[in-house]
Amino acid sequence: MPIPRFAATAAAAEIAAALHTDGCAVVERLVPISVLECLRSELQPYLDATPFGPDEFSGRRTRRTGALIARSPTCRELVMQPLVLATAGTVLQHVTSFQLHLTQVIAIGPGEPGQPIHRDQWAFDFFPFPAGYEVQCNTIWAMTDFTAANGATRVVPGSHRLADRLTLTHADAEAAEMPAGSVLFYTGALYHGGGANTSATTRFGINITYSVSWLRQEENQFLSVPADIARELPEPLLRLMGYARGAYALGYVDDMRDPLDALFDRRPDVGLGDLELARARARLAGD
Image (cartoon, rainbow, N blue to C red; front, side, top):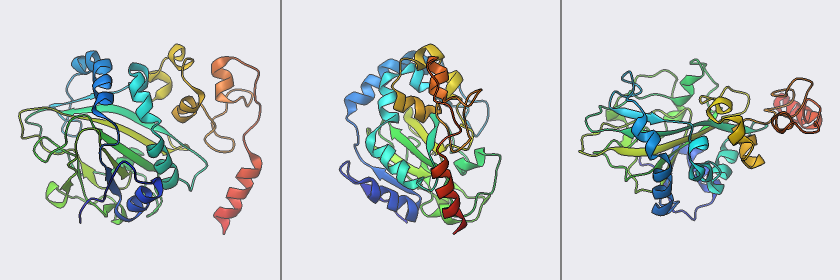
C-alpha cells in the first residue's frame, strides 16, 4: 500500500482523512530549505554534544537531541506550524485538548541497522487503547532528504488498524522517502521504525509529536524548557507545551489556579475548568 502524498497547499481535512484511512501521509516541501538551515545553525552545538544511544531501539549510531523549544526559536515555529496544528486538531478532535508530546532531532548515522518496528503509543506502558481511538498525531520533518538508503522512516500503511503487539519487520514496511522540508505525519498506532542507514552520510529528521492532554508527555517540557525561557514564549505555545488544563479538573495549580497564572505570578483565574463543556462531552460519551 503506497503512502498518501500531498502538496504543501493541501487542506488539513485531506491529510487527516488520509491518516484515518492509512495511518500516515507525507506533505512535500512544506517549509523552505532556509528554515532548516536556520534551525541547524541554532542546534549545531547541541547536535555535536549529543551522545549515541545506549541500545538497539534508540540506536547505537543514532543521536537524539531534545529540548528543542528551549534551544531553537525556529523549532518553535515548526511546533506551531498552522497546517500541522490543524491536522493534529482534526485527528485528535475527540478529546478536550491536545498537547506537545516530544521534540527531538533524530540523526541516524552511517551503519545504523533498522530500528525495531513499533507503535509510538507503546510508550504509555503498553496500554491497550481501543482500536480506532487515536492518542497521538506525530510528525517527522526531513532536515535532509529522506531516502531508502540513508534511513528514511519505514512505515506500514494501514497498520494502525491491526492488532496490538504484533511483530513486524522492515520487509513489511515502506520507506517514507521525501525531500528536505517535507513532513511525514503518522498516528501513534501506526507500526513504523527508523530505517537502516547504508549510506555514507547522516540522516537528520525532526520528530515533533502531539498527544491527548490527559496522558503524560514523553518529554517533560516543564524541565526541558527553564521557567525563565518559558516566560518569554507566547501563550498559545505555552498552553500547547502543557501550561493548560488538560480537561475539566486536570492540570490546575494549588488552589485551582490556571497554570499560566502560576507561571507568571498574576491574578488567578480560579476554577476546575469549563464545566458546561465537560457536561456536554460526558453526554456525548454516553450516547
